[in-house]
Image 1 (cartoon, rainbow, N blue to C red):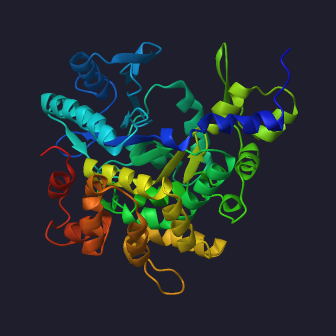
Image 2 (cartoon, rainbow, N blue to C red):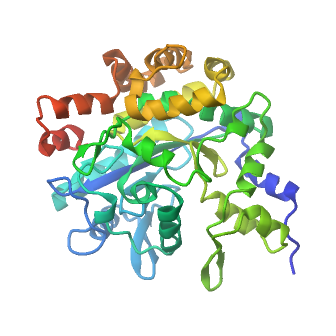
Length: 432
């Protein structure tokens, strides 16, 4: 029988994300809602459902269907790009690791052009939002995927809003590289430290089930109330001397969900990975699967994945990619970004994180400085070529307005739109 991995073996998993600086790449994960003309989510099954949308996309592109028990749950391009489905049939585009913003933009635009044709064919809407604006989580049927049969009841019990996270939210994630363990720990530290500022800059989910939620980032609030053992931020990893070992030690103590065996997924709820590992039964495949079930504001997969961002329009997704490249791939900018938030206490970080979900850029540090000021300063650190800086334009417009997109949508909803859903749908539809 194969020996159980040592702690050094578990740490070595993170080295799979190492790249030399000249080979650094960026990857985009872009989640989207597909709805009917009234904003109701498309079901997965049936005529004109999301499964049919994927089949139509495959017919146009030659991308290969990925099936589970005969059902199409994603598509593979063959060159690193893919489409996958979130539990409530939200569609996620995953780019390949791209060497430049221009290359990433080209991949993204190509995918969007195919989706534009498909949504026109099916007469459905493609919404750039962080939360489903019309339906509640209870009204959305989960897709038939085995891991969600275990994940859904766990999240239903583990937090107030776990089902909302699964079925009624969309986020935008960016994946980026590190050169070694010290660089990895530093970038994790900065990514987690910036979470309240990033939440506020990209807040774009003020509605829940057809009404104002009380938050300009309902998605962000939902995550803050979803299984605190595996979500949120990790205080041990936002310290000046934090290391990659701190992340691994935190991950070891997170409750497990499942392991994969020949017979399928085996329910492991009720055990921490540390207990399972110390029993001698764990494998490196189990460790990899366990790490995929952790959802903090930034995580290793094995590249660093930034997870603080609401779903939004494609141009804001590219602005996020430009911001990440301009901060995390410049040593000077990275140091400046950390200095911006380094002296915040754990209590201040926690409070700002929640306040950013509720108030967006109008939230303030306890000392009185608004997050809008922090956002402006963060943007001033960005180190990009003139050509790449053009991708930041939509984000610059948001900051110039003084409020996030979620704040503006709420203002319009309560004002000239009179609480009507159709003007909001027109405003956030990615294809007019």
